[in-house]
Length: 140
Image (cartoon, rainbow, N blue to C red):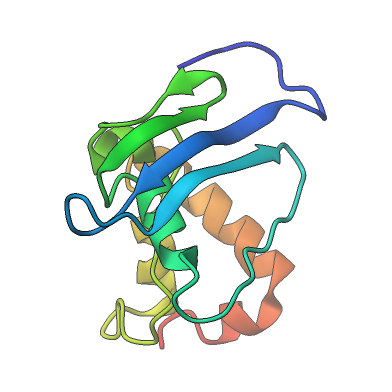
């Protein structure tokens, strides 16, 4: 992982000419490219079946990339395991209301920082101060 200083135009995640799909020979994405810079908020918009979820799954290693490249801060992440992506600060949580249904708010936050447990209290306090309603409901 690079320890280079972060600049406002730093490319955090880049996909170049990515081709991927769920069945060999049947590609959903064909030469798809995307560049995400530090500080940007990006939306992926399109109708059902356009490949939005396929792109995300390819970016986060949940789907094999047939061709093209995916880099995080200039280093290839294609083929990395989930824990290796998490160590780089990359994660994917599908949009479902039942991903972690039995966990409290505090437990959900703890899941997000399990690689750095010593920082949990400080970061949890930061989030609770930012979102006071969460603090009220942290055990729900």
